[in-house]
Every structure is written in C-alpha cells, then in structure tokens.
Length: 478
Image 1 (cartoon, rainbow, N blue to C red):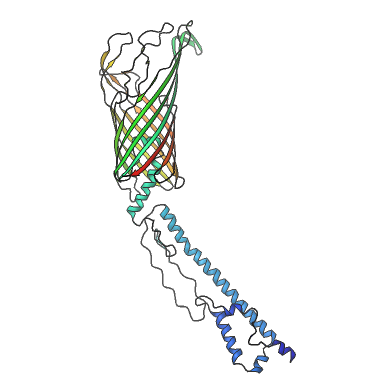
Image 2 (tube, helix red, strand yellow):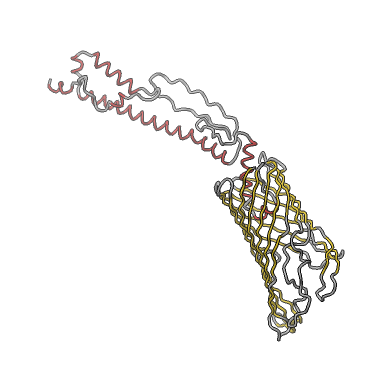
C-alpha cells in the first residue's frame, strides 16, 4: 500500500499541469475548466477507498487530457488572431481609400453571430465585407476624415493646389487659388541668363568653309534679376484676386569683331534698373471637380506699362570709328515692354493618385500704340504706330506629392508670338517661338509658410537659356 499511498492526491496538493484547468477560458471556450471542476467534484464525492484507487498512471492520463485541451485552446487563440487580422484588412483598405480622398459610402450591417452550444468552442467571429468606401466596424471613423463627397473633393483640391504651386508657369499665369478670407504675400527672386552669338557674312562662299569677304561676329550676353512681391486674396474658396509688383535689374554685354580687320574688338555693357511692369488679375474655379472630373480654372491677367519703355532710353546716335555697329544700340536698358497686354486663359487640373496632371491654354493680346522712334543719325524722332504681335501660350505637365510637406512637378511651356506690325505693315522675321522645360520643387515649412524653387531651361533660341526662381509665400487670415 506504500505505492498507493504515494499515489494519493491530498486535498491541499496542487497537481502540475492543472493550471490551465483552473483558469477559465474567455467566452464560451470553457471545456478544460468544466473538466477540472468535474474532476474536483468527483474526487470530493468519492469515498476514501476510491481516492486510493487513483494511481500515478491515471494522473498521467488526466494530465495528457489537460495538455490536449490546452493545445486546442492555443489553436483557437491562433484562429481568433488570424480572423482579427483578416477583419483589419478592410479597415486598412478604407484608410487607403481615405488617403486617396474617396468619399465614404454606406456601411453594410454585420451578420448576427450564431448561438454556440453550451461547452463547445465558439466559432470565429464573422466579419461582413464592407462595401467599397464603407467604414469597417474594426476601424473607428477618423473625426478628421471627410464625411461627404464635397468635403473629399475639397481635400483633393487642396492637394492639387499644393502640387500646382510648384510649377513656375502656373504660379505666374494663374491656377493656384487662395482660400476664402486668406491673404498670401509671396516674395520672389528670379534670375535669367541668355547668350546669343551671331555671325554676319559680308561676302560669298565657293565651298563650305572657304569664304571671300569679311565676317562680323557678335556675341550678346544678357543677365536679369527680378525681385517681386505678389499679393493674393481669396474672396471665396473659388475666386481669387492678385497683383504683382516687380523690381528689375538688367545688365548686357555685347562683344563684336568689326568687319574692318584693322579694328580692335569692341565691348559695350549697358545696364538698367527700376520698377517693372505691374500686373494684376483674377482666377475663378469653374466647377467643383466631383465624380473624378478635372477642375477648370479661368484666369485673367493684365500687364501694365509702368516700367521704363524701350523707346524712352538713350541710344548711340553716332557711328563708332572702329566698326560702325553701335548705331541704334541702347546706352541704358529698359525695365518694361512699353505696351499694355491682356491675357485670358484656362488651367485644367486632374488628380489621378498619386499624380496630378495639369495643363493650360492662354491668349496674349498686346495692345498697340503710337510711339516716338529715335533717329540713330541724330534727326528728329518719328511717330509710328507699333503693334506687337499677339501670342498663344500652351503649357502642360505632371506633379507629385512626395509626402505631406514636399511636392514636385515637371512641365513644358511654349509661346508662339505672331508677327509685329509697324505703320500697318508686317515686320519681316518678327515672329517668335519661346519654349522651355520647367522643373519645380516645393516644401511646406508650416501651415502658413512654404518655399518653392523653380528652374526653366530654354528649348528654343529666343527663350532664356536658364531661369531660376525662388518663391516664399506666407499666408495669414484677416
């Protein structure tokens, strides 16, 4: 009986492996707990001789049963965790849709869970698949997320505006709107560089590379810096008025090798600075951009003639004794065009996550006037009606929001300038094509302050070779 005495289970002895039986499982999964309670009741009710009959082998079998139930519990826990991960997938999809600025749709009610049998493991929870754009029960609604299609469109418009603001062309001609009641004060610094080389042949060539006569080679380098203040005010969320006040510095260097072989090269360096042509205009968003429609923005820009006119600067009136090329050249440089112009246009923006496509078309109407043309020979000026050629501008590109603070854009801008007229007759060779590739980068330092850097590279002979513009807009409310 000694072996049986060792195999007895005193009432105060805690059996190893029974800890799982003493811990109730969550919910209806109470199989091991019920087994432990039943075993305790059996041992309490059995007579002393029945307790002595419980051997070590019986305890081992009991422990194996408890371990098997523990494994089933762990498997149930693993299935529950897997079901929770699957139920979280619609929530992640919903968050992706919200980031794509889609409007949330109506939620589908989840199916009622079936009643589990007493003592049986509870089935895994069934999660109803949400409709596209519908919030999931596993993902509580973000209070900052858009709740209507109009609000989602407004958020999408703000993202589009942040991308469009990086393009150098759109920042000038229109398309970037300011919210209602907000004033934007934008300071900018712009640098332009152009170099042209001309070879004028006074003679004839018998074969390529062999020329009889003289060759007059001129090289002109033009540099300009423009500091400007642009003010924008949002009358409504879809209507903005703006004005731009520039200050211009210009400096040219003209070098020539005169036709006279005995003459030395000549260099002149005229400069000029002062107030440029003040501009003012307005932009209006035509439609609301719902249902994946592109947004159309109508723009109107008017340029004045407040800058110094090219017809008001002094010129060289005498022939230089070494080459004669100075006749009619400017001694000082103008800071304006000398003509008013009106520029209506339209800008189109369409968001296709993660890109924003944009484009624009505008017409430049240069208003002609009668000016006094100076006589290089020193005679009295001549009154002449000049009509600068009108222009048609086209631009397009694509932009990306890299993150919530940084955006970039790539685009192309082209302006076709028609022939100018003097005294009612066309000026031969006065038509121009001005094309440039644009790159823009913007960083939003805060809700009020951002920094934008734009670069343009000339694609045609008449376009500036390089143009760099740094803009720092600051927004504040009245």
